[in-house]
Length: 264
Image 1 (tube, rainbow, N blue to C red):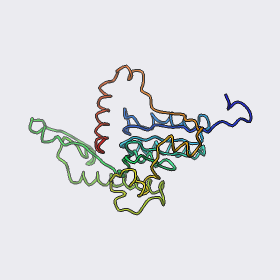
Image 2 (cartoon, rainbow, N blue to C red):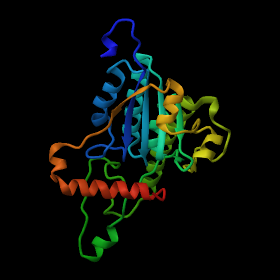
Image 3 (cartoon, rainbow, N blue to C red):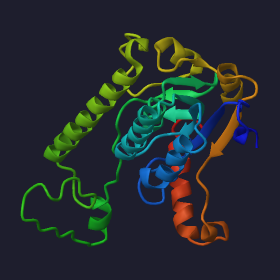
Image 4 (cartoon, one colour):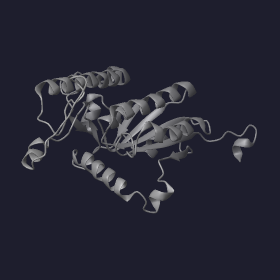
């Protein structure tokens, strides 16, 4: 009620947006379509003094990472609202891309940060289907339409094309990090090799700004009376009552494997 009384100054408000899980399309926890309404509300509701991103993500789709980060930057500049990122367990690959959307990045001593690179993973089943007498038949109008078919032997020219695409994506990722972190980055040859570091070393390399936790740091920046407005992805009604269990289980397995890459 105080904010409606003239000449009574309300305490500052900081919107806290949780970005947790794999980044991707479909049923992945983080994608632009799902997060857009939450991010928009965080910047527009209640005239926040700042927006804080709480990040716990092993990465995923580079495109969805870029879309979410670009939305955050657009709103920050449009509303003139600073953005702070706080890493929990991990901000790796696309998770670090999201962190770089902030004006500064903070983490725990044990947080895993980095993995600036691009990966493509698949499988090859051509020997398996051959042993079972199955013949793979693929017909295309042009030679590049069946690149990296998992049911056919791997072709050197396909691998070369894939590496070219991954290289272009990696260049875009590196450029974005350099633009966002600027002179804070140290000149280290391992910085863009896909390596990860814990909080203290990530600070020394300039990947993050220091070690801090969300609430104490925000109180340090905006005063002890700061009010927190929390925004996070909610499960739908049918999901909460057990619907679509197969899809949820598959998504959970994929996400578990992504976190396991970092020992989590």
